[in-house]
Length: 63
Length: 138
Image (cartoon, rainbow over all chains, first blue to last red; front, side, top):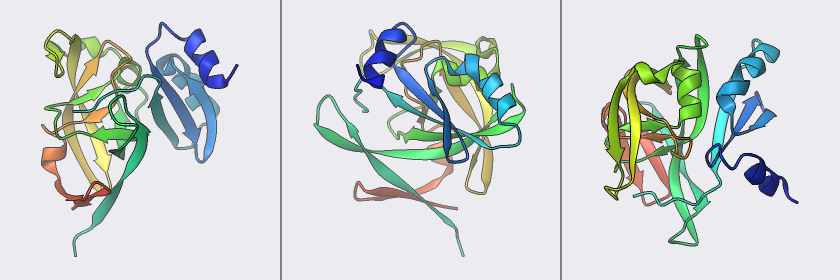
């Protein structure tokens, strides 16, 4: 099973957005419950600039 | 001499078109909760959106209790698709420019982060370049 499918099954009730957090160029976390993890991510990467990106597991129409 | 910021269009999947290019920009937003600037990538620059929108998870880490903001029912194209959103003012940094603007923070995580017109895109001088990039002039 691909990582993408595992994430869909694990987090199907948490919305469709998957977040990625990077410290510099390194990906340090990926998942849905960003607000629960961010404090720990920030603490363990003290002094580094954190960047959040996201992707939607559902296709959407922008109008 | 004025400064420019280039926002490239990004290839994505679409439920109407096989592939579509959308303008996605990077912003730094000041987190009241963590007292620091957080870079957020892939924010959709959406001239069709009246207001800027954030999903719940991002709203919580930027604001904390986002439900202290004014509550509004917001719809998209379809009036039956109603979402509860809470208006909160946030500081954003784009290039060298820092300004405060209202964000509607959704109680759902299904909403894509979007920079809309009011207090957002309407504060900028933007050139559209043939579906390839946006050029923001400061």
